[in-house]
Length: 459
Image (cartoon, rainbow, N blue to C red; front, side, top):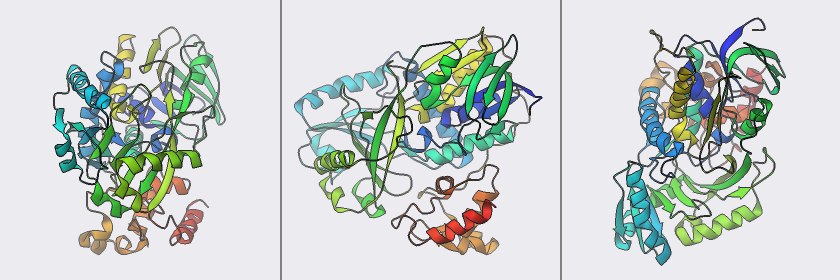
């Protein structure tokens, strides 16, 4: 590795970085994916609302408005190939005031401007027909039939696994320290030694502005925006089978109620600018805010058990759009300020990055004989899981040995996760691959056994 000069190094192993590495590795280029943490998808990409957006409400004329619909198309197709769980639930925006009701026609016009033609204005009665458990006082709404929910963990892991199979060198635990741009080769000094390349793509999420400055630019500043969410027990799923969205305001998109691909119901997020780029703690104030909103949106939801809470950080900037720019003199491309729509736009951003590199003379012609997309283990509730498959259990009894009873995770699935091309290094990584310990008891029953497996795997 020390003697190799990669054609391209992609910095950042989140969903965007993994998508870019996968896309570029479809050519003759030699590619490395540089990630500071122990696993891919272990920052912003692991903690979001997990919605596959249509782009109906993106700011018209922006790069975001261009790439989100394209990303929706690409990721929907890729999910079918790779077995990424997706459920087309649709969404409804609910107006609770005359002001919000009056804003709905403009939102429908914005969707039309963005190329999405399927939004419909509906009456209050129609809103309650869609979501009977909704709180009192809704005045009307607007439907977005193609909004969907997706598994963000499987998406990132699939893209990274695909990139690895195509020849990408996945370099974990490589925290970037400094950059030296030479005449033809850039040296990236990391905590694991130097990595050399001809081109760098910066997809570092919350750290993208810091890396941008290492290349001599000062174009944007990341302000981590914390979003806290509450996850309700699976018994709450009967209350809502579509995404319930607020009418956006100048303060943001607000708090939503959404089913999850894992059978739960989610309430959130909050929106709070922070200074600490690693602060994913939850707060008493955040919970109080969400419960107050939930009491208005869906009072019956608050009668259900909260089984988990979490917070994610979004890479917000001072700009109203993604920050995408190329510096051909320094052989450098930045994909910064990729906010909550980054999951949906990831494959389109990868496509766009490839085009930008092509325009500077980088040879990105697709090569033949690429491996098929990896078929990922299903951790969603809408597809058959091993514990429910007599055929799977007959062929391998380990799939009948349930370890995590809340989420019906078997020893076979845990074994497969550790045997995979990108195995987990800790409990969080195992959770993202199997859902183990993520149920009602939060690992109280299965934690000791899973800890024993983890210790054995890490010897």
